[in-house]
Image 1 (tube, rainbow, N blue to C red):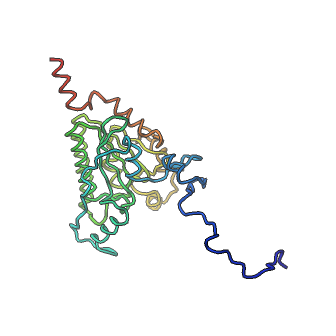
Image 2: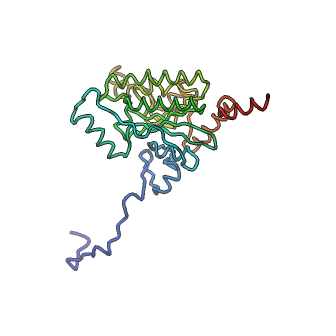
Image 3: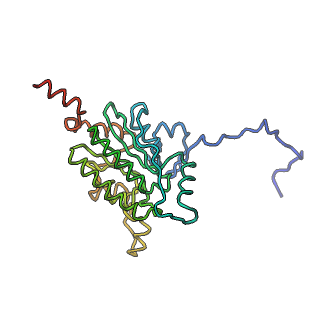
Length: 297
C-alpha cells in the first residue's frame, strides 16, 4: 500500500515555468567532493578551498596567473606538426592533428610567451595536456628550443611548465630527439648564466621528466602532482610488488631529493618573482648593464 496517491491526474508544468539550474555553475572537487561555485573555484586559481586539491589547468590559465595583467607576447604561435613518418592508427596523423586543433584551439601541446611577472621579465613555455596528452613531438621541442634561444638573446630568465604523458608515438624517433635537443639548449642557457625555473605539474612523465623537466636551476612542483618516468601501474606490473603510499607524488619526490620545493598555486607568481630577484645582477637587461658600464667610465 502506497503512502501517497495522486488525486488529480495529468498535472503538467509548462516549460516556461520550470526552474532548472543552468549547467556549469558548480564545481565538485574530485578529491574531497566539496562543491563550490565556478566563480569561487576560479578565484581560488582552480584549487579546492577545503582540501587544497590542485585541478589540472593549461597554458591559458597559467599565463593569466603568471603574467602581470595577463599581458604577454606569444612566440612562434603558428608552428604546427608535419607527418614525417606518414603515421596511421585509427586515423591518419594529420587528421588527428587537425581534429585536436579544432577541439582545443591550440596549434600543438606547448605555448611559449614573453611577459612580466611582478614587473620582472620572464619567458614561459607551458604545456597543454588537452593536446594529445601533452605529448612531446617535434613542434614541442622546436618551440621550447626557440623560447630558450629568445631567453639567451634577450638575457631573460626562462620558466618551463611541464605537463605531459611523454613522447608522441606518432613521431617515434623524431619525438625522442627532442630530449637531446632541448637539453643541449638548456646547457647553453646555463653557460650564459641565465636562470631556468622548471615547474612540474600533474602529470609530468616519460621523456619530459627524463629531459628538460628535471634540468632546472630550481625544480619545483605543485602539491600532489604525479611525477615519474613510467606510470605507477606499469611499474607495479613490472616488479610485481605493491608500491609505497603516495609513490611518485610531488611530496614523495621532494622527500627523495628530486625537487627543491613544492609551491601552492596561489603563491606561484610571487615565489617565481623572488627566485628571479635573487639572481637580478646576473639577469639584468643588457641595455641596463651597458648603461651602468658607460656611467662608471
